[in-house]
Amino acid sequence: MSDTGSPGDEETIKRMAEDEAALSARLRALSQKLDKASEEAKAAERAQPSNEVNAQGMRLAFRIVGEFVSGVLVGAGLGWLFDRWLGTSPWGMIVLLLLGFVAGVLNVLRAVGKVAPPEARQVSSRAKKK
Image 1 (tube, rainbow, N blue to C red):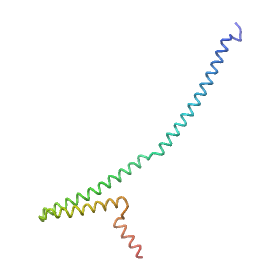
Image 2: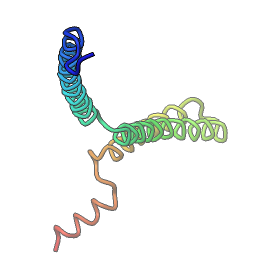
Image 3: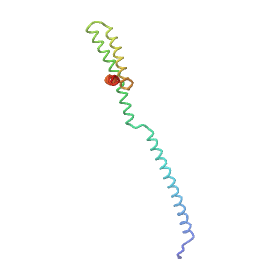
Image 4: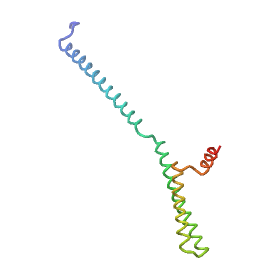
């Protein structure tokens, strides 16, 4: 036996070195693809609205619906009671239902910020007078 080894051993070592180099290249390529995919996922996550923003929108939507429906129901209920006590059916119900509708629309506009609340209007009118 000699120290140099057989020609087959040298070919095996050479093939293993080539395989290791190819494996290293594939690992680098895979690492780059994973980094790129991770950056794209982070960018997509930043582009989407957060759950907090969605929750705020839902809160505002439920508030608006509640404001409108409560105005209409209170107007209808008071109109029904008014008609029942005074026997003016259906006029009390019609008038107070319409007033409830108007109150509901006004409450919705206040909730959205299109109309200032009465307190804010009084403060601003006092400031203009001074």
